[in-house]
Length: 216
Image (cartoon, rainbow, N blue to C red):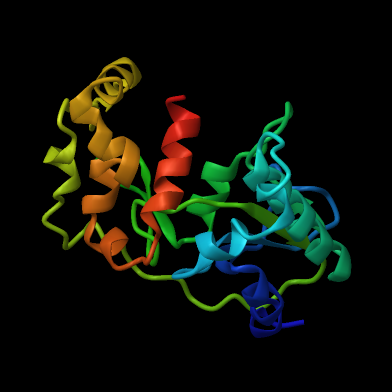
């Protein structure tokens, strides 16, 4: 099995490999698996695909998570692997540490993860733990933030994101105002101003979905 063959299985489901690594004994991955692949939305088109699926039609809670469990779980089973998810628990899987271990995600100047292709709009729908050491290829040699003018640092209207951490209360207070509708409807301003985010192809409706879950 190669990465290209796995990508071919993921593509019809609107998913893509967002990086991978060969875990060690202290990485918090299941025993007996030699490769971990992080999965995220394949853009453009992910949101149009997933919202047409059954989980978004039945009126039940958590449609995106339920879709992820069904689709990624089935792919994992077909590959003789194990599906892991960033939701559910306890126990909670260390998805941030796993993302950093791939070499394709970094901590950004505002503390959020930034991905080489999705930028600050990065999200992980799940991970595949597989047997055997798949050839992963070399990750980028440096974070995209290294040569960036870092507009994310000044984008938040209330300065909730920065090197000192995330002021969650200020963020929620802003989202509850008329001025916060921009972030609620289009997605976090700091996330979407990232130059990589702007070319990632993410639908505003997807960002609005996540914002409603974050700030009901």
